[in-house]
Length: 163
Image (tube, rainbow, N blue to C red; front, side, top):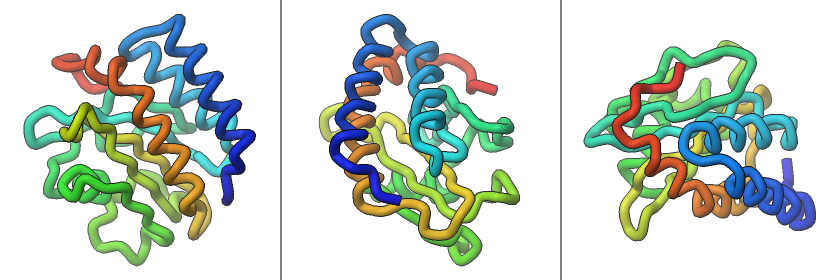
């Protein structure tokens, strides 16, 4: 699905409004909720923070919780995005041997690193319920969102995983 410039700009304004009134995990949870509600092809939205060699779930929104509240860097699409320091789009998770199954209905995934300067400090993880749900416009938009959430993600450092 394509995210056009006007909806993306409006969404970033709304995200800035969220960040002006909330901080830390509350801000991240509200951002996850907003993204899932605003973009119908985002079926599950999570934000992970990087702690050492593990990704720790900081906030999420979806129909159900994931069992993957901690992900080693050596595992899964999330681990790949953090290791390779790049956005990873998987058009069909059933064809990706690194995919860590969370939900039976998930068919595609996009994972976008969050950078603090040159360092990856976390990532945005989104699941979709159809093959090839994400394209370059999703990547561009989510990369802009990743730049917005550095501070609230940093504020969750040392907290237990969101469940």
